[in-house]
Length: 300
Image (cartoon, rainbow, N blue to C red; front, top):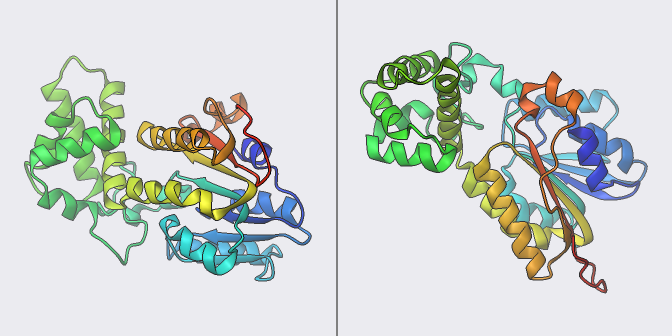
């Protein structure tokens, strides 16, 4: 959704932007093309493997420290970074909450059930507990609540019983337990429905392992103070738990006259991207504009 991000953030030469989730650098590169000359991009990425790789690629493309810097941090650290780097606030802030293709496609990171790997899922492999340890310490009721809260999984109780019935250390072991066990327990479900439950299960585990919703709550609370007057923010979400939080935070900010304008409905990817990129199908973009010091509130 690069086109949609640029449309709603409207980057201009000389502005200061923050990319809260550098990932593979696609959004960062597109933003820099509009921020230069004279502009600057501050990037955040908690992944100690992919972040430096992306920065090396961007440096090779001519984007050096004069206008691009990286902080090895989760976006929950945004207030401290803004205080040090841009105390007057950023002109635009972007957060793409999706897992990067590099992480999903690297088997040893353990994010995807489509390849064999350890059941890890940590964005930063040097901190926290992997998903396998999370499963080992949770009982079935606690895991069922997690699956419901983080993925709206309708068969949470059944899946929780399956995943706590035996040790589960690999992605394929988890996938097989859920797929075979859920089909046996709910034979009326189609293969597509069972596959969707597998996907939601992996999503919920990843969200829990990385405290993604807690980090998002911290970001949403910090955003107004990190935006300059008239500053724009865009957030790309990929599941209902994220989208609900962003929607409610922007609505509350608009009611409190913190945001002058907000999106009234989520922006979706265009038809071409939706059909060509399965990962874009779930994406929803919401945006907001920080109120200017002397501006009146305009209904969105």
